Image (tube, rainbow, N blue to C red; front, side, top):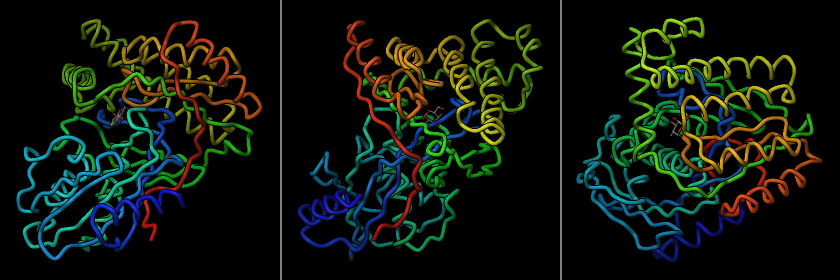
Length: 386
Ligand code: GAF
């Protein structure tokens, strides 16, 4: 963190020729369980991770917003009164989209002063660990402070989601921004995506001698195109055919009726969401009653459901899960939106090296690109750093 604080400060000074007035940060996230349930008004159980995006910011006298990053040092600039989703493109749509979205939530953009913003991050991009939500939440928190908007964190999560939906064009739910803003060290965020009630629940991985291993397959994915939107559309069609506002309103006991009413593919999509919601509730209960060593089977079942019913896995993710399980992981699943990105494996501390070696060997045998493996810890949510 100290390193990122200094690189973001240096990067800001090099780009804008002055010192920043403050630093803010927001973490990426891992979803422990509850996939594609958020936009179905269901339950999720993600946690914020110890990989963060930092932003350095200084207000300006005029109404111009300028953003630059360590990946794209040329600044992109726009006047606040020109912000519309259509005017935004590329990576800058994430930070500038947040400024636009704050306007949609009542910020008087035409009357506010602009800012220079520089972004640096150690959240891996494209790994399914929500590098995009980390940018959105850091920018939302910073502008909320400097523009004195006094929004609650739940509202800032909706601001980030709106930016992603409209400025970036990805029809995503509320999970990632909620995890990034509400996370706490060593804890998961159990979120009801209908009410946005959130409960922070200790994970107890350390005390149980467990590590959470990330296996980044390096298979790239995008939620602004294709599969994510089509899964969401299937869920909405399934809910409408079943006569409920959202799939959250179906219980596992409704599945026999769903099988009679729905076509075969829509039924499997619905079955994933309905059983996944139940698995989130079961995971939270199991964690509380028996501790984290007992949740492995639920992680495995979640992966099988995504592979077979929701069909969002891929050969590399399946192999990551199978190889880590065979080498001693207590449970494993793909995490995030799917079609690439990362798998997670819950691994006893003393087996991390062996599991990692087995996964690497299995990928080499299969002729897949070498995955990137590292462990993460549950960390604090977005904050002002300086
Ligand atoms: C992506 C989305 F951004 C989330 O809202 C969620 O739907 C997730 O995929 C799947 O659970 O991360």
